[in-house]
Length: 320
Image (cartoon, rainbow, N blue to C red):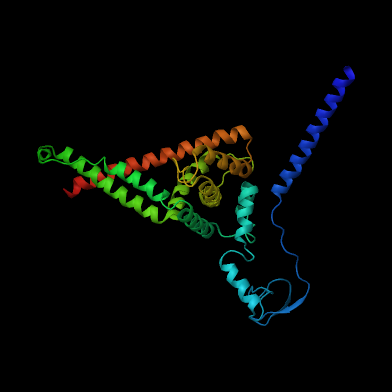
């Protein structure tokens, strides 16, 4: 019996060791970024400035050594580069955002930017892909959500009766709130037509929160606001890819209570996955900080709405 227990213990120990080794190899694979192409040893003459050189780029004007006379293959390559399929590959960047988002964002912020697609341009392209998918899979999902939200807000408008003239402050307040509701309706309609801009502004608020919450990061301490902003833009592209999958899988029925076509718990998991790799905290602390980021974002949104309401009331009072 004792030998049986020893065999079980050895088997469990060996299994744990194998799992740890595989986890370590997987983590090392995630941390490994895109390797730079080998330096060409062939002599070249730059077609732009006629400089003779050895390497991949002309040292005088920077033109690539791969530039040649226009052929069908060359023209096709240049056309694909416009859509992110050249050297700064969009598919490669999106793939890295799936399996190593935090490490890829860290690489980009540290200056290894040549292999990756520009973040803001990528967000617009991914958002366009989401809109196209939405129109094909669930054409009325976005319209239904925005229309319901607009209807609920418009119903809050209060009719100012003639008797309110005797109470100028009350009248100014009611008219100011009605003006706020009208302006909010117009802004909502603008964001419905320009979802990428909505995401950029929304993640700018995320950057304001993350720069404070993750200021003592073991991996990247004291990241500045601009770095946090571009990190959030890359995370926004990652979230949009997950949204496309959720949209196709659920026909738009999971559009619940945030900017994306996913429930908030899934949004938190995606943020947790990226934040852990990017900032280097442990799992539990990263989960706590992710929750703080979401609460801080909602607080900033509430504060902005309150300030907007107050400004609308004051402006109405001044105009009257």
